Amino acid sequence: MRTTDVFIKGLGVYLPDSVSIDWAVDQGLFPADQVGVQGWTGAAIAGDVPAPEMGLQAAQHALKRGGWPADDVDLLLYCNSWHQGPDGWQPQYHLQRNLLGGRPLSVQIQHGCNGMFSAFELGASYLLADEQRRAALLVASDNWGTPMINRWHPGPGLMMGDAACAVLLTREPGFARLLSVCSITVPEAEEVHRAGEPMFPPGVTVGRAMDLHARSERFREQIISGQGDPAALLKVQQTMLLSVEQSLTEAGITAADVTRVAFMNMSQEAINDRGTAALGLRSEQTTWDFGRTVGHMGASDQVLSFEHLVDSGQLGVGDHMLLVGVGPGINLSAAVIEIVDTPPWK
Image 1 (cartoon, rainbow, N blue to C red):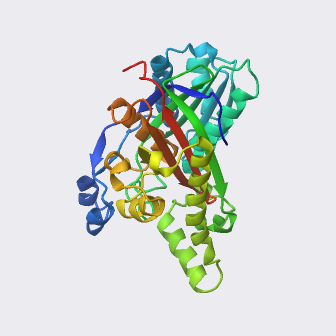
Image 2 (spheres, helix red, strand yellow):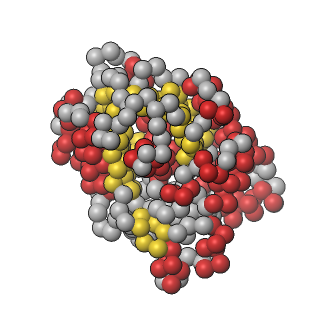
């Protein structure tokens, strides 16, 4: 989707301090022989701060930075990958009660690690559909410090960090322009994230922990035994390249124009093999040096990396930021953002 005159006016974050990978190794939560291989140095830990409260603080941060009144938001999209609170309740209404009031349409998006890409596309479309609409607030938040998951080693190449992010999208000019966003799904690979697990009853309702190692191994066994589609994973890689190519084309730039790129926070090996090498980008263009210190933060990875570069002065006017995401589905997403002005809080 090529977006026209949709701007980013504010960015907000909630990022707690990180706990060292050495502590996790000492506690038996992460294998010592994988420290050098995967490259993680730590994970952001929020303790017992609820994810919706983290999201609220990130949203407040974005509105303050953008100088935007809370009662002038037309749409709230709240993304999450992990459990948020009591069943039968939805987290976006916590933000309405404590920040925005009852006027905006508020919707929860459960699109896994690619939730913010969906929010970009839906938020931009919502604003462009009616000239009276002025602003959309996009939020993602997760706290992985719960039973049912080992945040330190939940699956191949993964380590989970707690964080929240918020993006204020507006029709009015801001410091950055959203040029394009694209998402494509490879449904043949749908079983990658559930292999060996029954769909009913859901695991959380019977006390079954999430183990992506076991699911990945089961999917591999299915392929070896002829029960799975060996071409599915190759198609995932090809589709990632296609989504990036489409997003770059719609943005009117090429890979040579990309200043920095943010992938989902994965192990260094995964980013090098599936990311930079495949796209023809250099490792120093990535945000791995930041991501390795905080872990994979659900749908927040790319926005938090973007905010880190903006806030630390590593992006300037005229620079282009490429965001690349991979999520269950398997869904492949990409977006291009151009810096057009100095952020107001700088």
